[in-house]
Length: 581
Image (cartoon, rainbow, N blue to C red; front, side, top):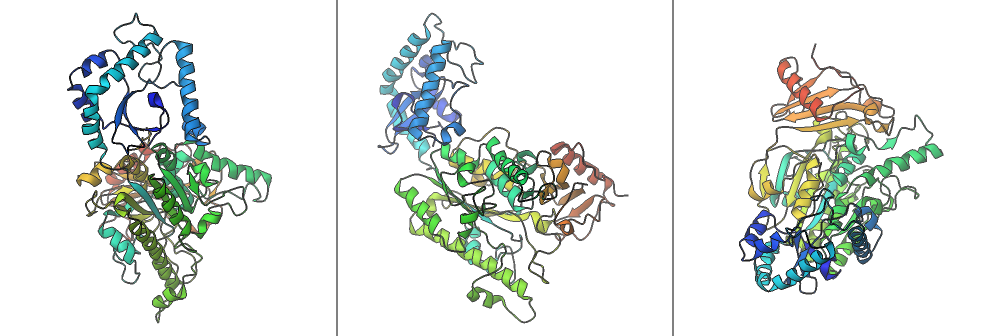
């Protein structure tokens, strides 16, 4: 929850009101309209004492925020009290300087109260007196209606992110051999989408999307590394480019930052590319990050899961002890290579005729599932499972090469189903009724959906959908299509995403259109042969393996979906073929 000192100091939490219905009930109270006519409740929220656990509520009048107020990034490095003190100081300076209250709703103009003869200071004093006078008849409303609206408690949130796992490779998705009992159980307790997708099939841009809620072409981290073709990896120029790429996260309000604004403690473990955990806005974490030694994509964080769950468990215990909601980013280096599963698991999958590389990968999937079971079991043991929303997704797909340790064609990095498709799960016992959903879902939806579930602020301009209402009610999702893009692993120009653009795609119902572009590839060229440069159209229901290109048979459909892609993100420089000829 966002802390705001307001009239009552920093020992109080500010709860945003429950929207139009709350104010409708307020307006029905005797005298409330009169008080509003004096501008008392121009911006109103309800403030509850931490010590009383939210049972004793007061009304707080919030002046419109000055454009010069302290930003969330200014506050990141301050203690909460220091941040509030500085924010209050700036607001006071603005009032003294301008003699008016300025903010988004005022357009920088003096805010009228209907009594313009009052000076700013007298008006504020008059409003303050009215607030305290009004407490006696509004206290019953606060204790009753508003506290009742707060009863749905703020959930803890656990985001589980698998690393390099095919959408088929779970028991609940029908795999005949891989055993995932813990995730199977989680799916039975979830609203889950078997047609989930990630917009980009490579870990770093995919994780950046989960952190910011934006597509790769928007957040700018389109690949894993600056291309070593244009600067030696040991050079100062290359280090500068790595630092510049990491700095792109500073342009966005991240998921952990927005949850921290709501009062959450947040923890990073596992894969993380964007510097230290603090750079991503986490309050706690494991990764030291670049330029620290080994800080490319997780360093200390990569131990989670493979070497136990202690850091995550200690964080959860600390948050519980502090009586704070928590957000846990659990992105273990699993089932990612090296495929070195415990012998007890590998032995289960070693059968006659099965390549050892396949047996190892199968065992890695079960090892990852075991760690998920450990984490969920710990939440249950601590008595917080029913207070926790668990969200599951993978960063990108993987199809194991039976002849070696790497991935097969049309899997990781690619825009085919083996690279971009993933189950997406939302589990909150007692709040979300378990159900399998056949609609399309995308990881671009996770940031607004998680923020909505937490009651946190959702920034304007996020391209994903807030699915929380759909999860609660079971209503259908009002969306016609989802989109995605593939870029080269090595970023040719970190300032121009188009330079490395290889594919873009759109899925509408059963149909998927894939367009191929002429962007630059350096390493991993064999992953992107781009032999077929014409449009590729697949019926994903009849042909989930994408074996038959139907673009020749459906030219009008190709044209319509291509127009959708162009409207989603207009490309200026890269070239593609739009007709199957």
